[in-house]
Length: 224
Image (cartoon, rainbow, N blue to C red):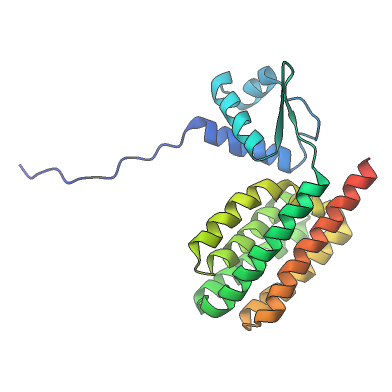
């Protein structure tokens, strides 16, 4: 009888990680608004889970700044801290600019075509007015540019920081005018990448984030 070959174990994702993704999406899209209390009973019923994975998910979301844990009062969706957001997006802008520079130098033609394909799908979602689907492709494009840099340390830093600003990036497109502007900016970003225009791509990526920040801060001021 032949020896049994060593096999990789089956990777079963912990339930609380699935719950984290579901809750994060609800918060990012605004289905759970800032200040909303996270009612454990209702959320358990809605998600079909017990309280243990829900509580683990809430703790993880608190580390991302999406949830605030209040002593003896449970958890609420955290408000966006404008000053902290500005600092994070400033760092994000620097990371994306460096990623853009490296991507211009190292990205293969095939990788750029993959990004172009994502861009076309994103445009289709914009035309349909499907913001949730648009945002998924939008995030995939930014991450693809970062990964095309070939720098794994940069990519890991970007993923960690991006988890903390996804809600703000999504909110920036609540304005139809800003959403349309963002699409035009993406056209310019793709053109600069495809033509290996390092200086232009670095500038466009930083301006793109700066414009998002301005849109979010305007929205926060109006809500206040």
